[in-house]
Structures are given as C-alpha cells and as structure tokens.
Image 1 (spheres, rainbow, N blue to C red):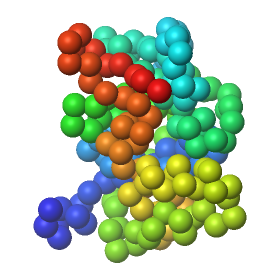
Image 2: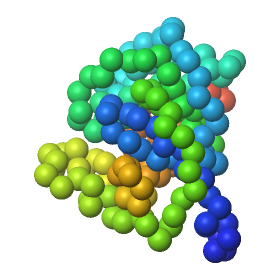
Image 3: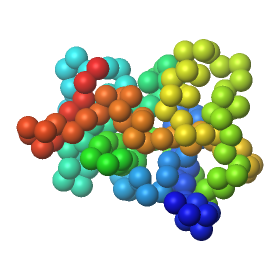
Length: 166
C-alpha cells in the first residue's frame, strides 16, 4: 500500500454494545436488518444464530458478548463483513458513518482500555488493529480477519457454506 492509498482508506464506524468500533470500508459489504434467526446448537454465546441476509445464510455474531460485556438488546441490525473467504454478520446498534482513516493517528488499542477488566482488554486487543483517537470520539479499529478467526468463523470446504465452531 502506498502513501496515497493509506490516506484514502475509509473506515465505517459503528456502535456495538455501547462501544464505538471501526471497520475498514473495503471489508464492509452492507448494513441489513434481520429478524429471524436459526439457533446453532452447542455454539458459543457470541453466535446468535444463522440468518438469511440477501439470500446468503451467515452466522450472526455478537461481538459485545465475546468481549465479556454481557447482553445488549438487539436492534435487529447487522453489518456484513468479509476478509478473504471469511464472511459473517455482526450485530450492531447503529452506523455512525464513514470517515477517512488517519494512519498517523492510530495508537495501540490498549490506550483506550485503561481500567477495563483484564479479560475484556486482552480479548479486545487480540481483535484490534489499533485505536483511533483523533476525532471527537475514541474508537477501536478492528482487524476483521483476526476477529472472524477468533470468533470461530471458517469457510466449510465440503458444503460451500459458512460454519462456526467454539
């Protein structure tokens, strides 16, 4: 990536469990409502179930549950994210907007997590690409590939579908 590409990269900021997180725009495929979920037996608490999103059956992931923040009332809104062959939907509260990523303003994710429980901080840092603090809000920039891997999403080779594992 050259300097011009880095300056022009966009980030989609969303609210998840009361926290502002950023996702690289190129990894966001769209925001869609959902209502019907099919439970996945024996799945971790952060897998809400499978849902049909524009004809694609994807796992709906609860990032706030993975971070140990407890349940949040669903608003029935998800953002579809992809990284390579991995694809899933993340339950979100709302989209805050797209902004240009300022690579110079990125800091280690730990700068936003002072005083948080060690468990949640360690999990968040394992999913983060950095912290963005240059605007009027602070946000964690998530590494979508790392996040989907950590949340147990993988492409099922035999069925051509998406499966989750704990």
